[in-house]
Image (tube, rainbow, N blue to C red; front, top):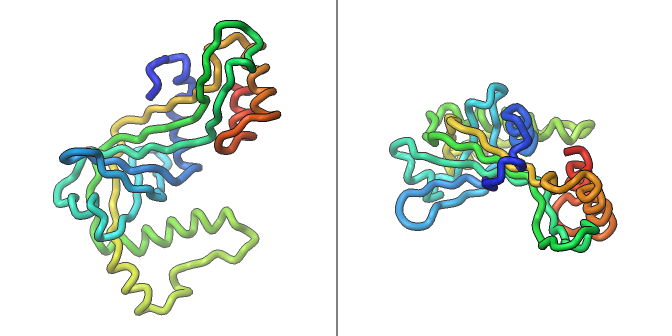
Length: 204
């Protein structure tokens, strides 16, 4: 997380809502050498204490889960480059605005019998966002094809011990300077989900 506390404006509820709505992040586990990373969809409980996910059985992280491991899920949001010229005041430097939330805790294997329920709940959540499309469900699959697919993946859960968020929106600048940068971001900015970033810069 960015060390400047001025960028930690999201409270725990806001950070959890952002992570829950996003539902996708980078799972990181360090054992020996470089951290192992896996890009995963996940379900976050309403109280924010539990993240549920699944991994391909051959994933090195899954193979390392004989015992629970310390882990972190990094959830990224809108981001974009900020030119110092956009502020309209002298002696500024380039930077990057962004939203990021880290969920940290203990990752462990869930019982194999929990897998189908997890897949059903994950697909139900994401399919609901496609309404009025009829939701896809696992019962649309041939039973043997579903069993073969399920043998290739393992259910996991992470008990969340801490939540941290950075909402870096130029709020370390005077309001008029920040809003001037937002205007330029809207006009010519680049990054990921720039319209959402512009809204956040204006509303912070």
